[in-house]
Length: 313
Image 1: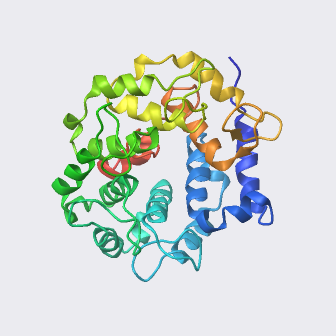
Image 2: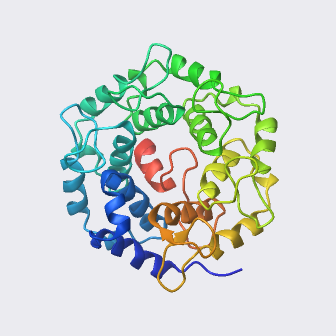
């Protein structure tokens, strides 16, 4: 088995932020806050978060906040629940949640809950179980989960469960590993995992491993490094991670590295990006790769950060 090119990945992540005129930077302009979360969490898992200027990052994040309390993907853009979670997660990484007006952020999120318990992503009303997870995760980190109707939120997620044990983005939607993570994560945070058929879902998830060792998101799809997170974290939360071949997955992720220039791609020999770099390293963390900090499978933050939030240690 190869080795994780830690220093190269750190160099790559730091360089991405500096190359404002690169293709990657331009196409990510509207979701730069998500990119900050992916890059900074990767640095923290690698033990290198001190490579960045925390004050500069926090100052920029707060400029992305909208008067509604929600955060936009970049300065001057519209707020969305997706970017709001990334902002809260990055502030948690730096132990700076105290810079937030927590009530204002919580009010923005609670205002997005619909009558049936689902959540919209923003004022335009798109509904998706991703947004249910984001709302529950974000409010939990802010210690404000009691501000929403948790019972209705859980019931809506359960209504998206399918006959194969998986979950879709809305009731009747196709099971997908990304949505499964969102639904299982939300149920885990709310203490509602008893709604999951763990053997049936575990079987569906372990069937996502293909011959190369990588994982896909749906049947008949190509493997992709990002599912090293979506599938693995779900398997861990339902205690079925021993149903896949961890060694083959290790090798697949490490084969997707650019060992010369840093970064991780979706599949071997493809172009690297910050998204897959994060999910590759996060997947290796779940697999307990030596030298990496442990990551929490429900909150998608380093375990020490989650312990600091909830236990003050």
